[in-house]
Image 1 (tube, rainbow over the protein chains, first blue to last red):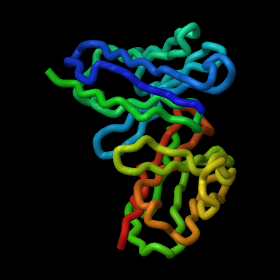
Image 2 (cartoon, rainbow over the protein chains, first blue to last red):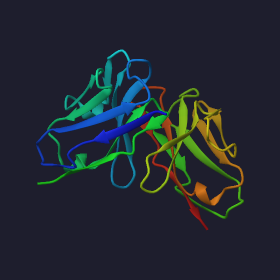
Image 3 (tube, one colour):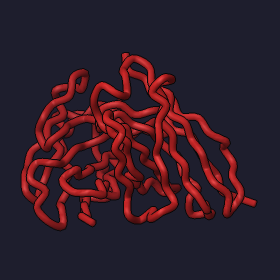
Image 4 (cartoon, rainbow over the protein chains, first blue to last red):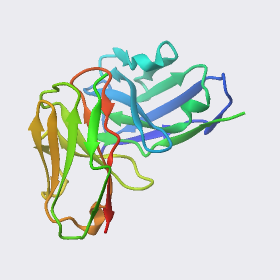
Length: 113
Length: 107
């Protein structure tokens, strides 16, 4: 059974960087699929942030400009989200997902001083 | 970016009703349209992919149709477990985008 689990700090101060980890079990992130980060803002709006493919290529939502980076550790079957210079508008629930098919349970991030 | 407009925003129904949820794209997206269900405090669950392809484990009362700019998710005989939010999402062009959702609620 494929499972994804997000982990992160929960609270970040404005202007700092946010780092999240997605740990995948039951499927190798190098086999297939795009490995995605998606966030959901208070009020339910969903935003597709970016992905790292099974081959290691990346694509990012232009709205996030140069603030975002998605990387991976294939030895641990994990992939990561880094978002720089966060503001209160980055407060959201962050999901990792395997393609469209499987999503993690989400991790809530609050940006506040 | 492609804008997806979902209607209605809220749909109040009685168990046993059959319903249709609409998703309209701002430009043609072929069949690259996917539907998700989200219940309170849960992550979205894929119901239908590529407009009409069924997903293993999803009840057969859920079906999808459409292509181009107009898409429909149909639920044949709503059950109490179906209440929640429904989102459409396009993967035709980057960035992938979501609709604002339709809330299916008990009348």
